[in-house]
Image (cartoon, rainbow, N blue to C red; front, side, top):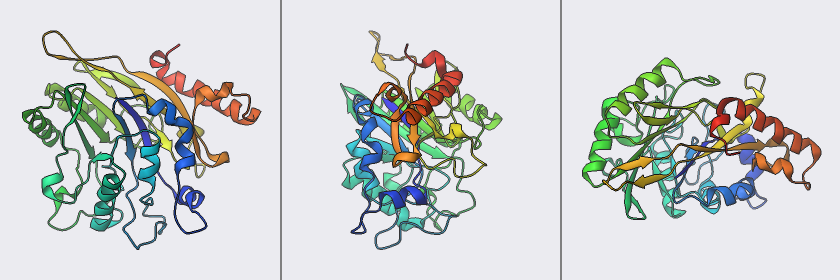
Amino acid sequence: MAFTGDVLAHRVINRAALQPDGSYDYTSMLANIAPLVSTADIAVCHLEAPIAPPDQEVMVEPQRISSAASITNALAFAGFDRCSTASNHSVDRGAAGVDATVAAFEAAGMGQSGVARTEAERLPALMTVNGVKVAHLAYSYGFDGTPLPAGEPWRANIIDPASIIADARAERALGAEVVVVSLHWGASMASNPTADQQRVAEAVTASGDVNLIVGHHSHVIQPISQVNGVWVVWGMSNFLSALPTSDQWPAKSQDGVLVSVTFNRADDGSIVVSRPSVRPTWCDKGNGYVVRSTAEQNDPTLSPAVREQLRISEERTREVLGEFIPA
């Protein structure tokens, strides 16, 4: 499996994707990264912005964000199989936005975890790869004051260790051998896990029912470590985004990673999780918000300025995750 950071379609990204006929096309932003993403059996993105409801504007006031439904087509084109969708923006566009988000993934042939149109679909279906049944769950710390639709608490998952463990056990009862949990948690621009992240990770991994945790929301890269013998990818920063949008956001908020983990069934039937492997990425805001592997710094067709920024980005990422980046 492979995982990436936040796909966060700010207004300027939506404007860049807007076509003369009024449609939106994000494909060019993700085309360069497709060769890396598509090598995974299951590639998982994190769509932080919900899909705008049909017949409503994609770009609304700054307090709320959304993407056009076609972003799921671009993600599928890049090789992603599913996304986590639980974030602090999950219900920015209300119940209609949740419905539109699930429908867009369905139309693109992708799965998602984190939001639901009905209570029955809150627990996602299992995936089977090479005979191994895999569950992917997703949760957010909250919704920044935006209430869930009245009487529908299942619309978006909120982080609660007891609920996460209960869901993991429910998936295992259905046959899951691997359970991966995506968590939208922590604090923006915090380069190290917060006390709350550590508390949640400790509780969830102690259950023995979760094989891997991957994190989002920090908008900068955080470390990778083990908690109770379980790998925790604390924060993968941004994948596609327009940050930094102001002095509030550091240059490293353009840095991202593609984290790969292999699951193997041992002779005794248990699942063995490999040490994570990291490929640094960088979002090129100056050239159409193209997500690039930092290995492109060796591409002579790119401008010296872009190649230098890729080199600097990789250096920043190596400072945090160098031990996980292949030589």
